Length: 153
Image 1 (cartoon, helix red, strand yellow):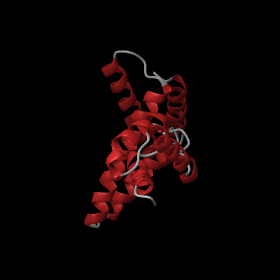
Image 2 (cartoon, rainbow, N blue to C red; image 1 turned 45 degrees about the vertical axis):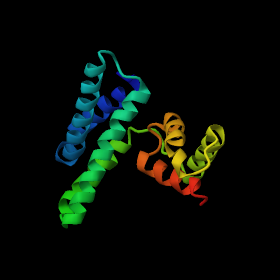
Image 3 (cartoon, rainbow, N blue to C red; image 1 turned 120 degrees about the vertical axis):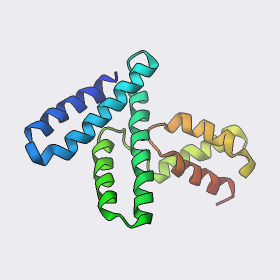
């Protein structure tokens, strides 16, 4: 498995155990993250690379964000707060996210490289951009910026 991420998770799990009741939520989230990474490694039948580990953890964050949106819509603030706390724990193990400026530059370069000229070229641009920013930018955010730039915004 991605040694850097796994080592950090293992060390933080020990720290959460030592923290007692204060570390209970972090411990639970770390255990879930380690299980997700282990399941992905089993599925691939080999240890994960750091990039693959980041993808797995990003997927965990995305699932929680989507659930939080739904709970927010339903007015269940306690559930939203719990999920946001879990997201904060998992995000500590993800690579630093790209700023809007950095992402905009990458998208502009991809538009030029693919010769995209409008919204119908969204797929070409998304494929090129996502292969470059995987784990460092959320797909929804990338999609929104690509659409905006392709529309001339």
